Length: 511
Image (cartoon, rainbow, N blue to C red; front, side, top):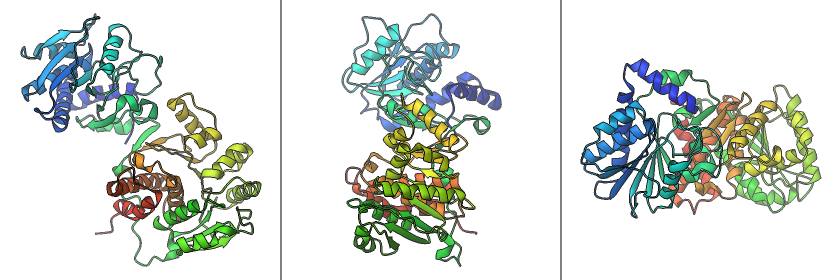
């Protein structure tokens, strides 16, 4: 699913009007109907209490006025507060005239803002995607008043004061803090970034029949990976397949005190469908690893505490390095030799680079030139900062992410609530699965193992494997959280759920 800019979102509305031969009022009525449907599913007439709809001077205000009319017709107790302006949109004015006289409506005034009782549901329809400047004056005072009130806030399209696809010009300017944001069509980039979470709350998309052809033709670097994007990505296993069909992977992981990372990554690789897995681990970890993962083959390093040797690479279709690796000088030398060998192999050997291997890369940036094309790096934000530089904000971090992936021709998985996969062509793909329960030690090791299995499977192209791995990892987390709750989720639960998660996404067999 594509993510459009604010300008493209406005163009999408116009394209819909032209393609479907409808008026902007017709489209506004659709939006209000979709809002009312969502609202009635969320809040019952008897449980909602009083509803206050704050309406701005533009079409967002028109959506709010049309919604107020529909909610009143459905039996809700509704009142409207109107933000005065020198100019109003025509559609807003039309819906102001259509508002039933039985719905109380008053203009907002400085120094006399409406009282908001505890439990009131406030609909923020002041400003939407078209806003391009910080709120000031009466609008800012209204938002400040709303944020201080003990209310449940539902934002229409976008919380007022928040920009759709860029950082706030004035971080001190007020922005509505919504519990829910209801948008139309594709998601907004602002929904997906941590710095906006306190404003957006839970976001929801309502289908109002916007022009699909415009979206298909729109050029954008931003994408949203949902189930439809990855359904059928994993090929069905042929009847006469064998362990050699699905690749032989090598995992370089573990150090004294961190063998759990190697065990988790290996388990994920095995559950991810690899044909064969060999793990090269420090000598002290042999008994732990062989007992925990008997399905994997095990090579032990001459050093007991960390990895100091690189095995021969010809048997392997992909190599993963980093989980629990440590940062010993000898392990750095292994990473250097691996990069050199992978880059000169024909074809280049797929690599998954995580954890301490990323930290070693960040400390020795001359190694960037050795990265083979389509290597997969899986940093969390702090690790990414060590690879690049501290980001001013989340939008700047995305710029750094795109630039890094393009410059080094690699795939970068920036882990987080909406994990973002950057491609060598500069695309950014945000993930839709996962939950806060996955914020636990070992979750990243599981992702590394799964990506290693998928990259060893030569039936999958590099991008397809990475996107599928990110989505399936989050889906496993969602399945696990449904069983254990988020607080009780541990990384081993993810390993156990990888098989069912991948089964949901496997290509169907021939009829």
